[in-house]
Length: 117
Picture 1 (cartoon, rainbow, N blue to C red):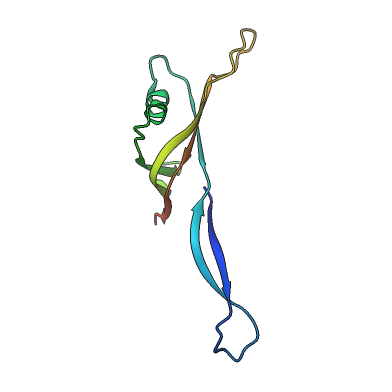
Picture 2: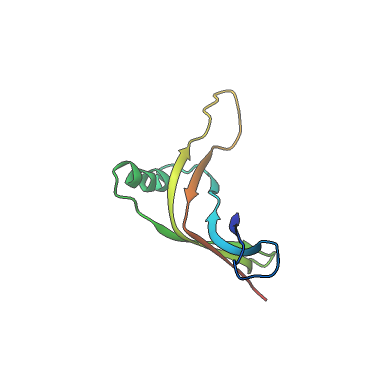
């Protein structure tokens, strides 16, 4: 989960100081990567991704929670207007015994974080 704030530098023409003033600018948000085990008949990742390929993007608000040992949320991230940019299926290896993992990469328009306590 990544947020970067652009730095705007300017010098006020009326200022007696000969240095730039720095102000916060636009925020940009890094992509979010989700991974999960594959379950038979569960095609939710692909159905959501398919809305992008059909040019009917379904943006979703997503909540991600970090849980403690008692399954209570410790930190909660809320992601705004997310949509999938990439879906990766598991590698099919007949001789392997690894768990099948799907990966979904999301882009989004905002991120907030809340601490429980």
